[in-house]
Picture 1 (cartoon, rainbow, N blue to C red):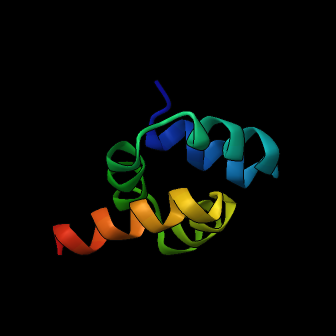
Picture 2 (cartoon, rainbow, N blue to C red):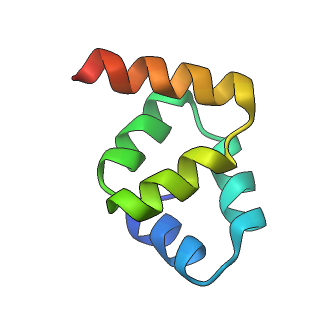
Picture 3 (spheres, rainbow, N blue to C red):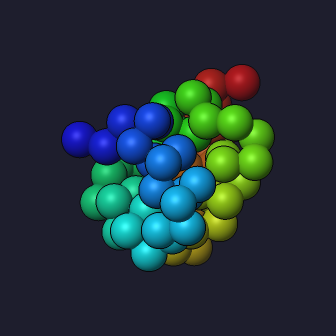
Amino acid sequence: MLDANQLDDLISDGQLGAAATALSALPAGDIAALLDRLSHQARGVAFRLLPKDLAVEVFDDLSAGS
């Protein structure tokens, strides 16, 4: 499973396609948990890589956790 350090490395290295593919394979709750462990900049990039429907689910999970 993808962890926050791996996702951060993919984003930092400009491997956005690989990051998007890895994120899209995870459930929304797991993605929300990963985003919570990223820097604000990496979190924004990762969120924008998500397909629209999945991004809505992740946003709902993030909002529920607040």
